[in-house]
Image (cartoon, rainbow, N blue to C red):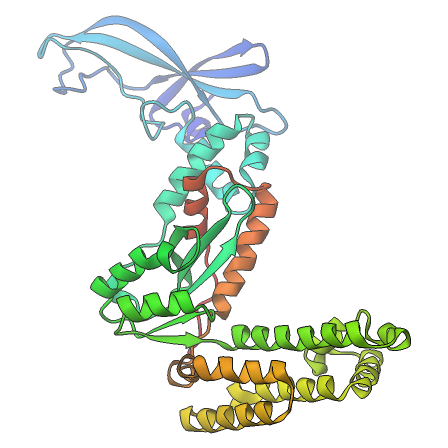
Length: 402
């Protein structure tokens, strides 16, 4: 076998092929360094042979055959110059303790960009732990670098990752499109440490998008006073939809049996945008709204609130929000009055959208990617490995609209 094939196929350079070694379920390509021995300590060629040893290194599969190895014949010698007993270095591996070649590691990293650890291990003919070790090195090497002083707009949200990992709180850089911090647990007390660091080092931070959590809001106010909080459309409308659905359930519990048949299974129609409904769905929605005046009023208020974020500037948004709250309070519906009170409490954060134009929408997209990743990998039990995976996830960069 030529040295050219060794290099181009297996990534083995400066070695010569000696022979094939056939063992049960394995084929070894015995190679030896194609150069006179030199002492790695002092570089002297005045050495005396002290025997050889063989080292089996996993190579890339060849077709359907998985048990292919590069067997390196390593020469040992005594250096007459510095009197040390040495052996030749093996430069086709990236670290001394590894049992696979650099080319194997490189191809495994390429496969891990779109395949799971289990899939790559099965394809390569090695254990899951070996491929995980390679993946950890890849993720550590590729982890995005960032500095506190470069942070301008971030988002914070919590996500449930299953019974093992439970809740994580995620901080996301809206301009670069990647996760910058993962904190175990949820709630203001859990994330106060990172908020404190932001206050000390992220002097250029302008705004933080978050859900309507009083805990997060207070911690942000205490630790990062230089940044303003933005409560985005998604969470405001989610709160409104919760009120609307509660009103539907209350009505369903009180109405007659015939009316219950009309209401049953109509939650989707009430909470989704009317432009996304088909003709038959719109007809059913009209039937539902005709049955109950409070429900109809609340639905109209919900649709009107959606238009808040279409206002052109801060003052227009402020006027719109004040007007909507007055309508909700005069509707005579207790749940709409509660909604009005909530919007007044969070008014400044809602209206800050018109100053900065940021939302936590991109983070919601990242959360969906996380859920897909966990389903694909059937969960990840190693917490450090999970965090590395999360830090390497990336979404599209946020486009500022303010």
